[in-house]
Length: 264
Image (cartoon, rainbow, N blue to C red; front, side, top):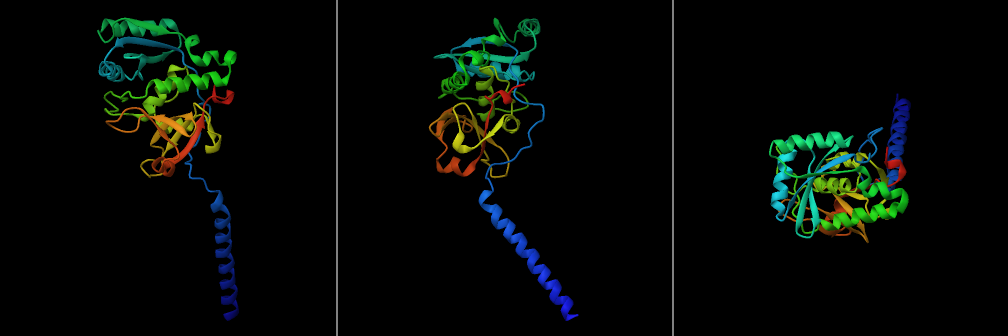
């Protein structure tokens, strides 16, 4: 009986030792980055036809129209058209006729006035084959910079008011012709994982700001360790550094959407 006890004890010791050894070897390679299963067959598509409306000198007026359109689930977003002038874009339609029909209905309901249909070939992504990937990345960074200092929020009945980081990244990408999903979690599922040391302008950087093991914040990398984002309620779009204590501790990973494999 003593012999059997000794054998069982040795087996238990080797079992525990094996677990400890494997864990010890794995620990240096464990990444802080979170894992969200990729959505198979749901890589980043390009935008179709989009409706553009309004020309507001007050950003709050653009935000109010955005709110009204989002009550109809139109994924509207406002942006700086020129210095001191804001416009609104919304929808993603397969044809010019479909976009025009929807715009005319909204016009008849008094929700929008004059409108313009944005064609797919007007987006920066449509020029990528001619000018290269760096051109598209540069346009995304330029668009992101145009939002700096602007109060950004996602309105509508289902999302509530306040600054919204993923609404900003969605707007920047869609303005350049890439149909980025609405939420940070969905954005994280698309694209290609990028190592922090391999970040390139235009990539998205993700954070677990709540410390709950899930994506809760996103920004646009603009180079030199900096990113542009909509930080929190009551604050304007700004630039921060990945090396800052707050964001360094909450960094959860990065994704790229520029390569050929990131499109349909």
